[in-house]
Image 1 (cartoon, one colour):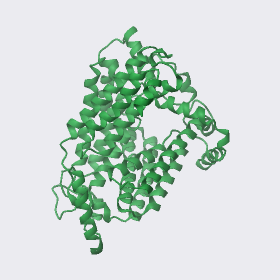
Image 2 (spheres, rainbow, N blue to C red; image 1 turned 90 degrees about the vertical axis):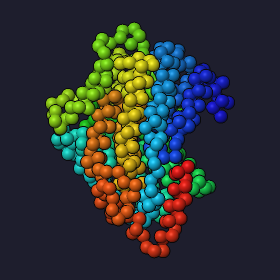
Image 3 (spheres, rainbow, N blue to C red; image 1 turned 45 degrees about the vertical axis):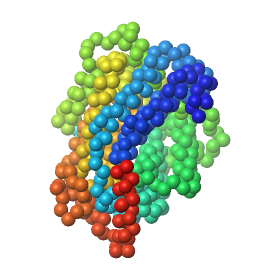
Image 4 (cartoon, one colour; image 1 turned 120 degrees about the vertical axis):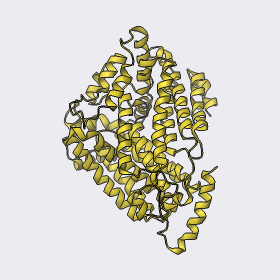
Amino acid sequence: MLAAVAPFSPNPVEFAVGGFVSWIVLRIAGTPTMPTAVLFVLLWQWLQTFARAVLGLIDGEDMARGVFGPWVLDAYWYMLTSIVVLAIAFRVVLATLRPSAPDQIVAHLGWRPIDLFLVYLGALFIAYAARLAGAALPALDQPMDAVARLKAGVLFVLFASVMSSNRGLGFLVAAVLIELAVGFSGFLAEFRGVFFVLFIAAVAVRIRWTGMTTALAAVAAIALAVLALFWTSVKSDFRVFATGSDESQNIKVPVDVRLGYLGNRLISPGEIDWSEASYLLVHRLAYVDIFGSVIGVKSVAPEQGDLRQWGDALAHVFQPRILFPNKPPLSDTEVFVRLARGDTAEQMRAATSISVGYLAENYADLGFPGMLLGVFAIGAVLGLICRYFATRALPWVVSQGLIVAFLYAVAGNGVEVSLPKLLGAGVMISVVYAVLGPSSPCRSACAGSTNGRQWPVAKKFCVDRPGRHRRRAIEAAARRLAVVIRG
């Protein structure tokens, strides 16, 4: 399909190769034991890059002839290459992961959906309380943010358990609706997270692909697209309505009033210019032009000093706010102005910050191909953290849930995330989750004794809990799933 469309693009080679890179990434990182969340991170960053070729096809304009200059084409190739290198780094670190033991793989089949839904509601409350605590005590902002983001892992456990056991679909739908309401009530597009976790869970448990599965997947994909287009069309007006200003993120309007405003807009679809919203969504998704600006600035007026971005990132990591309460807050906009010489007027009017992204920051410090060393190092660090969680004394679905929560927290924004936030959040979240979880690896979370302490959930929801009438079915599923995972 891409080969058929490429000749009609102003950049046919870039379009064809860019589409082919997604297959390359999956071939590199698609090992039997690779956590599904890793594939999400890689494909999400690929989509943000390839969207620039799609945007060129829509505009009918060569990437090198746009307002951001000829360097955009270089940025496109550098980003595609970086994503391949990132996939290689994950492959190097995670390719030797051993499959989980059969009882770990099927432990969740004996868990009641109602129990998991109650755990999710508890995680929702804890996330809200953690946000409030972080706002009240800035020194605790980072660890509290890590605690709040654990909710994504709980969502994964709920979704994976429901889809693999075919029980409790109503609880899955209820969780999705709650997340949509919470996501739309905020300032940013947080509603998309529940769809990402849902898709990751569906792939992770290898659900049986039937006609009904295809229909449900299509409905979910269409719902995500429609909601994304809706948010793109109303977000500017909604932010002004919620804050009473176009230069603030301090929400003043109660949540019920905010949801009412969005509901009124949603039931009036005729007032939305869906064509313009579609174009703006693709334009927002493509995150290459800013990198092109960084290349242009570096080639014309390079910044003085060596490795400033990496230095700032490491200083951010090794100076946690809980020990250094006077540490100045990170400013993505300041880096944007310094590296890209960008105009922040639009961001100020939208009351949002803008980042050049961690790939552009690597280029600013190391150039090309030197930046690939930095990208490989980032992938290796993230991979080692994922490996740590994957080898803990936990049921398979829980360890995968921790990886989902971790990667979505540090890389959910894809190539947009800044280098200090990527490394800082990665280290802080991994430390918090490691403190909360078991300290020693174990191949069986439900055995009578373990090599390390178990999480309470591993003890409560052990595979031995199902009644005798379900034991044979679970053992058969364990054998089938173990064969699949072991390749």
